[in-house]
Image 1: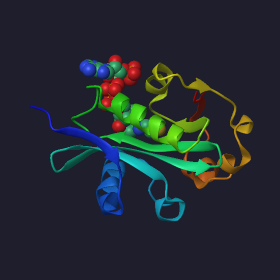
Image 2: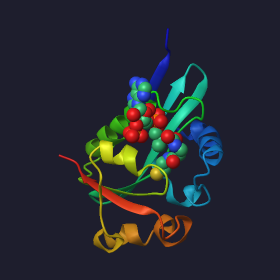
Image 3: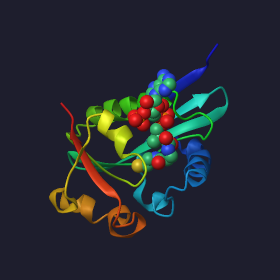
Image 4: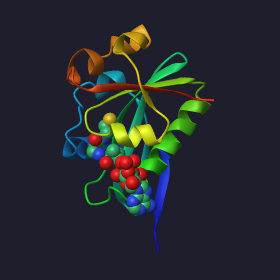
Length: 146
Ligand SMILES: CC(C)(COP(=O)(O)OP(=O)(O)OC[C@H]1O[C@@H](n2cnc3c(N)ncnc32)[C@H](O)[C@@H]1OP(=O)(O)O)[C@@H](O)C(=O)NCCC(=O)NCCS
């Protein structure tokens, strides 16, 4: 029987979130400063998924979306992204933006479309993820929440 649970993160999850992101080669150096809002997936005591939104008014940068290796391709990422979008909606966010090098197809299936970096809100363009942490080759995508 599965004991998988999706919930919003607490400060106590920080160390395990960072470990999961590092295991998936995603940036963590700016997290302490940016303090995104995270949701996580747990299986029993194990933290197996995470995703965050860095909020700028009614827009947000989706970042740090990762499922533990060995647990990918089973629908967990989709559940996590749905929960993250519901969380963002509840915060009043209307536009989600992200950069990805590896998961364009995954986000396309979830309604995100490619956009020019220059078209997204300026505060998002000014984040460390946009300026330096994600290479210029990363694809920029956005989605409007209804
Ligand atoms: C991107 C990522 C979060 C997706 O998580 P995931 O758990 O693998 O996602 P899902 O299982 O919901 O969907 C992935 C694929 O599995 C397949 N799938 C979905 N549900 C499934 C199920 N119940 N059974 C079998 N396969 C399934 C789908 O075909 C889907 O294909 P797609 O990638 O073309 O959309 C994960 O691959 C990951 O952590 N990657 C490394 C970190 C990363 O690149 N993060 C993105 C940073 S922006």
